[in-house]
Amino acid sequence: MTRALDILNHTFGYDAFRPPQDEIIDTLIKGGDALVLMPTGGGKSLCYQIPALARPGCGVVISPLIALMQDQVSAMQELGVRASFLNSTLDLASVQSVEQALLDNELDLLYIAPERLVQGRTLQLLSQAQIALFAIDEAHCVSQWGHDFRADYLQLSLLHQEFPQVPRIALTATADERTRAEIIERLQLEEAQQFIAGFDRPNIRYRITLKQNARQQLLRFLKQEHPSDAGIVYCLSRRKTEEIASWLCQQGFTALPYHAGLPTEVRAEHQARFLREEGIIVVATIAFGMGIDKPDVRFVAHLDLPKTVEAYYQETGRAGRDGETANAWMVYGLQDVIKLRQMMANSQGNEAFKRVEQHRLNAMLGLCEITSCRRQTLLGYFGDELADPCGNCDTCLEPVATWDGTEAARMALSAAYRTGQRFGVNHLIDVLRGSETDKVIQCDHHRLPTFGVGKSLDKNQWSSVFRQLVARGYLRVDVEGYGALQLESHCRALLRDEETLHLRRDTLKKVVKQQTKTALPEDIDVALWEALRACRRELADEQGVPPYVIFNNNTLQEMCYQIPQSLSEFGSLSGVGERKLDKYGADFLRVINQHLSS
Ligand code: ADP
Ligand code: ZN
Image 1 (cartoon, rainbow, N blue to C red):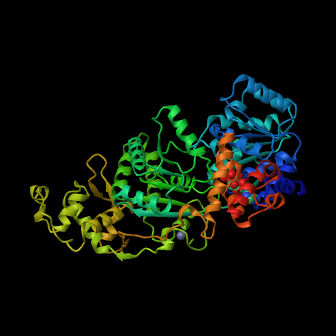
Image 2: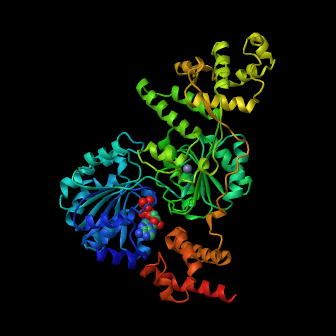
Image 3: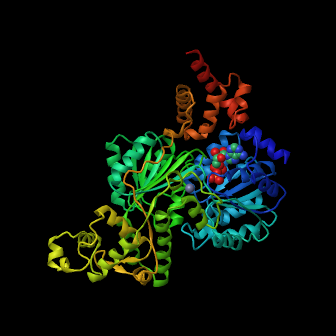
């Protein structure tokens, strides 16, 4: 293990392992297999990078994220690690030179796309080279039930068959028990040691707010909390991503749309700008997903409700990979529920499939309406337990008031029932509030016993009642008609007075304590910080790499606090290994000295 620690200190510039990194690395160095489940940002990469360096030969990393390979390789090269990649973006001459380097034992790490790995030519090549280990990244892609399934991953079991003596490590951040079992089976990892870290992402603050004027709410959120940060805004439709992006640009932000309908070049360009430049906002459909491995995404905002908790967790999980504070922010309302329920009912697929989908949507709605800690619920959904409320979600920071909505719920159900279960929420609210609209008169609904019984609640309050009734499955949305609300059998107990119902009190102006802007510690010397960032940007541009590849924000903050004045002091900062000390130490020291003397 001293060798591993040595590499951690000298090459990566870090002091200590984050358990269980040390155990995983030890297992691999000794030649064993490992299955690693760790949340995003947990530090999975070191688990194969260090054994690859410690063992003789080259570590082969299989990853579906072709768009990222260049950056991953650049980041390794910055550390002085001899890394390369093989994928479809390379021309023949480059491929040949990478292959030769591998055969000459001149590589520490080689990233390969799965479809390329399973080709005869590649297998032939690997059989002639000395291989330190195989790392199978994003291992959940082997699962046919998951949303990221890749057929090529199924063939990866051949690694075990063709190279039985080479240790293998499979890594993922998104495996529930079933997926985990599938990974073990399909990759033949029965012998592997399992390392299952919790799912929690404590640096992400979860907030779900009632949707009122989504654009203005988003604008306020961005202006107050993320005026110049990189982030992702998720929307349901392609058109909306474009509209929101151009509107954000009018508001002074740099926002780019991203969806599957855009030409490939445009998508590639927008993704590249997001990765390379600072402070870019991408407004996207779910098409913007895998491979968004940018560590310093400070917020993920949802303007529409995701269909499942899995999707919500994965999308919000793209924030704060670097471990610094980040926001997961969402607005949601009755229309979202209606829209999603209709979309789902009209979707392709058999009844069993639709039932599963409805079930998953219900879990998502449950998360929205919950009045206790969001993180506890989220983690519980994945079978992870959090003993105490987290203190870093909206319901923890600003406890939600509830009220006894039993009576109101009965009135609402009765209004739906007595109007024949053929009307949408707006009309039902008119009936309850006793509004004599044309439609009410035409339908003779002003003669119903329910007419006007609900004057004590205003329109918003009724809308809140209906939303919660739909979310909790007392009412369903008719999918053929125009969002007519119909009673579910579930509401019998409530109507018979056998059940009481506590509802969320939706507050209109909810002010959750803000995160500090740009997540910078308050005591930091902002002028020095900006000067260091400018230096980093310049170096990054020179080399054509994203800024964080030079140094990440943590290391930059360390510079502000420690104010190193010599190369040896600089070398002791976390994140400064020997290679980066040589390459960049003098540049950053100059910036620091200039700052001190100004
Ligand atoms: P993952 O692949 O699990 O999402 P990464 O491997 O990208 O996470 O690591 C996330 C961040 O944590 C990176 O910036 C990495 O350099 C840093 N990191 C990982 N392990 C350590 C450690 N032992 N000490 C300090 N920083 C670490
Ligand atoms: Zn909480």
